[in-house]
Image 1 (cartoon, rainbow, N blue to C red):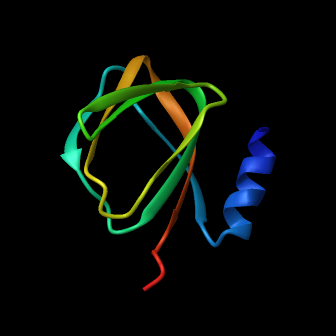
Image 2: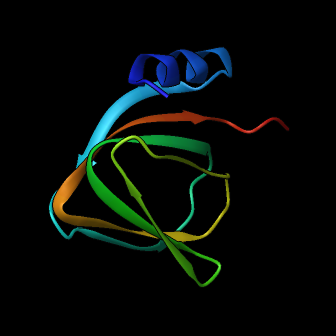
Length: 91
């Protein structure tokens, strides 16, 4: 999926869109968010660990993290840049 298509899809689904990134090898230990998140990697790579399993996402890959889902993040050796969407889950 192209970046603009990803952004359009986020907006259609009610996500707030923003750009972000993490510096090389940065680690965010186990945590959870109060919002649903979707990201698309636009540079570098990021590894998410959740439920004891790690998965690495590279340029062009995308993933979803549900509100309340405990996960950890580690940026790759060149860091990571991404398009992200967040939205408050439906009650």
